[in-house]
Amino acid sequence: MTASTPIPRASTLTAVRALLLASLSIGACVNVHAQALLVTEQEASASRDQPEPFRAKSLPVPDAPKINVVTPSVVSAVASPTRIQVQFQPTAPAQVRPETFKVLYGTFRIDITDRITAASKVTADGIDVAQASLPKGSHKLYLEIQDSAGRKGERPLQFVVE
Image 1 (cartoon, rainbow, N blue to C red):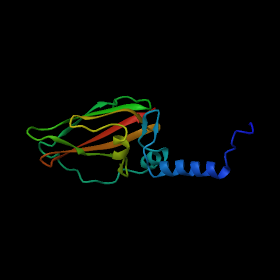
Image 2 (image 1 turned 180 degrees about the vertical axis):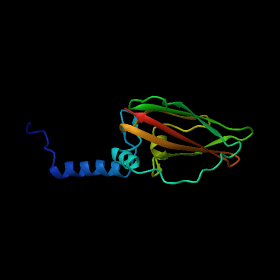
Image 3 (image 1 turned 30 degrees about the vertical axis):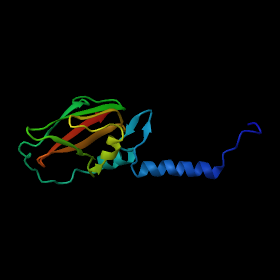
Image 4 (image 1 turned 60 degrees about the vertical axis):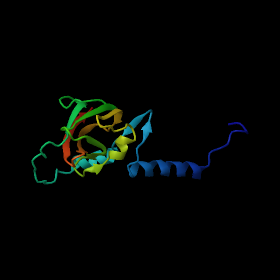
């Protein structure tokens, strides 16, 4: 180092590390080269380690908006980052209300909506996240959207990241 190069103080580096760790632990959206970190390794692991709780089955709401998954593939494993593209299909005359879009993750149904919407805008047509970063393993997302008539459409999305 030269005399003009400042030497980083240990306390500054410690503070930066603590801030980065805190942002990950509270689930903040982290953009690395425009990639959206949807879940941490800890969240994914905790979700996989727990059995799915009992939930009463219910019939879909008649004429609720449909959620169509364009990508990722649910029949074969995908790489991370992966594209997540979803299209909404309302039943006329109702319209999809983009502000009601919700994404829950895994067994604990962690609300990761803000992490998704930080990476891509939700429209009445759907959402397209170009680079969603997820740890390796099995993942399950629960997608929800409502229409102008107050009906809620729901769709689970399960896939594996290699």
